Length: 137
Image (cartoon, rainbow, N blue to C red; front, side, top):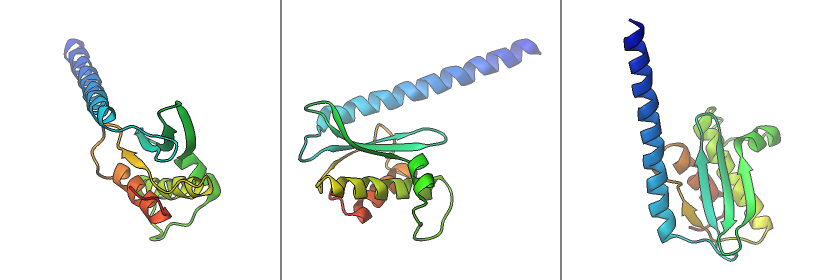
């Protein structure tokens, strides 16, 4: 019976590695098409199972201009418009926080980089939050 459980674990681990490799491949394709500059930076999204991160990047110099994550949103206690809870609502507020910080740096237009993820769920929520916050895509 142990042999079956170990083989199942190996299958799960190999599936997860394959899934991550496919996401990285998609991200490379996206990155080949878009570049961020100082005037029009790249809004890059990273999604983990627990948290979400967003940053504005200048690819010409390799600088991070603005960054935000859901931990900062929890600390700042930004009110949600629908009083929703959960990771998607936090992602929306991360987008708003990035937009707020970008407007302070006089950045109004960005290029969206979904990071190899589908434009759905939390990634979409970050984009919508940034748009509502005043950024143009």
